[in-house]
View 1 (cartoon, rainbow, N blue to C red):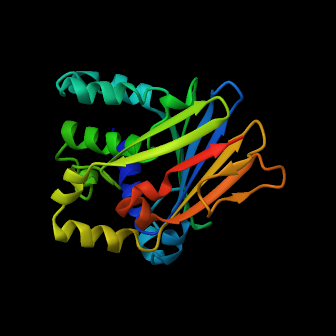
View 2 (cartoon, rainbow, N blue to C red):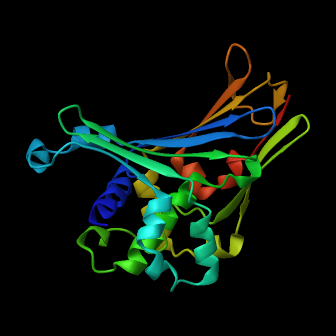
Length: 247
């Protein structure tokens, strides 16, 4: 469990200066593959050499299914809703690579889906892990810097749809939760995510006819669209990431 805590602490640090890249591959029948990569290599490059001299290189792969099995007794004590949320993450795999010599710090999450409706916000998986470690191991030294409310929580609910010749990604902001954020937390979020970038790449089986977001860039065959945002927009105005694609 300690190694898992280290991974999550690493992600906490990476989010202060990183590039988050989502890749969503949608097949003709609506099934597909989803992965998100967090690149915190720029943070590694800024860290003093002395601070890393005793750190070993890491290349670890974990599955949420195994993590949940290892902590089933603690999870059984959680509210039913939280147990259901964690259950949805069973098919996720995560990988962390850290190499001080190469100044590499990468974290990735991956899962397959039978329908785009199964997809959820990439950060939900990380938040769920953060929440779990806080509740089952509050005194762990690696958990000290992780907020109990989770990482990069933008207080929105994300849903995907793929029907006929249309695909959509819709984020609905919970205005009450957003309003409840105190000024100190809001300012801290701005500071933490100011230098980070959020990139979403959608890969489809057929060419895109049109897309609602004017910032979208098309591949030559028009089967892939790429949209890049400041991470602060994901946090402050998640509805800006909303998109409708027509084939």
